[in-house]
Image: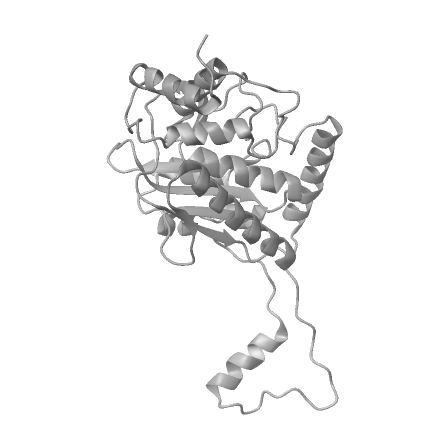
Length: 313
C-alpha cells in the first residue's frame, strides 16, 4: 500500500465562552426562551467527500474480488521454513523505495537489518475533520494492535499521549495537504522530499510510513505513518496494520510472500500468522541491527526452523 489545518467549524457557543471568560460572564448569555445552537459536526470539504466516495468504491471492488481477507490464510496458504526465510530476507533486508530531494520513488534496493532498539512509543493524531465515532474506533484499533505487536516481537511498545517516537496521523485530504509544519515539529530535520511526498500523496497511494535513523544508524529513532481518513473502515484498518509493521523494520513488499500483508496484491488486509513470525524473527536477539543478508541468513534459517518446528530441506 501501499496539521495541520483544521477545517472543523466552531459552534457559536465557543465564541460566547471565550467572551465570557474575558469579561467575567458579562453580556454573553443566551437570551431566555431561545435554545442554543446544536454543536457543529466536522465539516466535510468537497475534496474530502470526493476521496470518501472514491475509496468506498475501491474497498467494495477489492472485497468483491475476495481481497482484503481477514482470515489469515491458514486453510489455503500454507508455508514452510524455506519460504519463511526467503520472505524475511526480501522484506526485512531490502528497501521498497528510495528517497531523493524531489520525493519518493519505487525501486527495490539491498539494505541492512534495521529495527527499534529503544521502546516504541506511539501517538495517534486524528484530524479535527474526522468524525468522532470513527476516531474512537481508530484509537481502540491502534491500542489493540500495538499491544499485539509488542507481545509478538517481545519488544516494549505502547500508545501514549506523552512523548512519542512513532507518530500515526489519520488525516483528511485537506489536512494532509497542509501537514508540513506539524511534520517539522514531530520529526525535527525531516527532509523536504518526505514532506512533499506526504503533502502531495497521489490517490494511488493508500497510506505510507517513514522511519528515520540518526546519522545513518541501523536503528530507528523516529517514525511517522500517514493514513487517509477517507478510507472506509476495512481499508483504514488495513493501512494501520501494514504501515506500523513496516515502520518497525519490515520495510519491503514481496510478490512471493503469502499469506501476508507485505504483498501489493491486497489479498490479505490484516497481519497474518506468517507476518507475526517475520516480526518475531526481526526482533530475535540473535540478530543485530546492521546485519547484511549474508550475515543474517544463517541465523534467520535457525530461528525460522525453530519457529516452525521443522528442518530445512
